[in-house]
Amino acid sequence: MNILGIETSCDETAAAVVVDGTKLLTNVVASSQEMHAKFGGIIPEKAAREQLKSIIPVITEAMGNHQIDALAVTYGPGLIGSLLVGVETAKALAFAWNKPLIPVNHLIGHIYANWLDGKTPQFPALVLLVSGGHTELILMANHGKFKYLGGTRDDAAGECFDKCGRLLNLPYPYGPYIEKLSEEFDPQNKLGISFPRPMLNDKNLEFSFSGLKTAFLNEYTKINDKTRENELAYALQEAVTDVLTEKTARAILKYRPVSLLVAGGVSANKKLREKLNAMVQSRFPNLRLFIPPISLCTDNASYIASAAFFNYHEVPWEKVNADPSLQIR
Ligand code: KG4
Ligand code: ZN
Image (cartoon, rainbow, N blue to C red; front, side):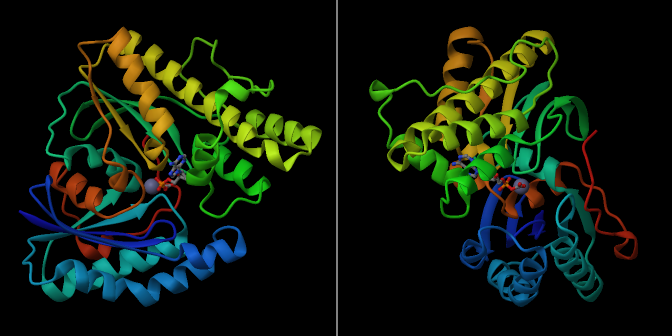
């Protein structure tokens, strides 16, 4: 079955055609990042206006000469103006082409990037979902069977990277630049910047990253030295990735899954990938770890089409509506 996925929840306009939820035929992403870089962040109305311009060209490119059996679209969570562009376009196409339409939760979508890499994760699976707005641990008993185990009480890990990156006046998008700055730092030269590991010792599976942002701001103001920004970035990345890795280990101990699936934009971070890999190898050698290829971690439509295939649930197009605050819980 060929599914056309459409994704416009944040600043990207994306479309992809995927066969049987696993084989990528096309994957097109247009981003208005350059425009947002000028303003130091996303301006929702500007993002939606750009998406209106690019949605049809992006879908046309993704479709090529492929035939499709159904359409899938992200209906939340995200920016309302952006979601509406994708949802209303998908509804119009489903009506015009007389094809089924499957609405997909963006967060669940991210998880399915793990099925697009020629692999088939087994259940029960623990999911670490780390995107710009969400940091969550989820137990996946099967396709469509999700149990929320814990999440952030305030900022998400991605949001923490973004806010600290903005403070350093790094280029947008900030997360990848925090990573780049960290890589330029040689830990041998460490002069003593270290950040707290929030909630690391709490027994629950909750996170909190907003205090880390304040600690970063305080240290940044105290140091007031441009040449030490890479050490600041390094220390921040160490703290965030330590907490994510250790809390994930705690959830593995408690729920004993057979697979660990990592998903969301922050899973593109190489330090996080390394630490999760090392943790699994040393402490849970029988657990299978899945992390999508870096190109599929950040927002794109391939995983929306894949999630629709594995959770096939047609909804009459008249009943599909954007829901900006959709959750997994
Ligand atoms: O999943 P995503 O593309 O969009 C949302 O659904 O939010 O995630 C975007 C988040 C941003 O906070 C961005 O800074 C972060 O993922 N991110 C990274 C990296 N690439 C993207 N954070 C750290 N290291 C990266 N390489
Ligand atoms: Zn996302």
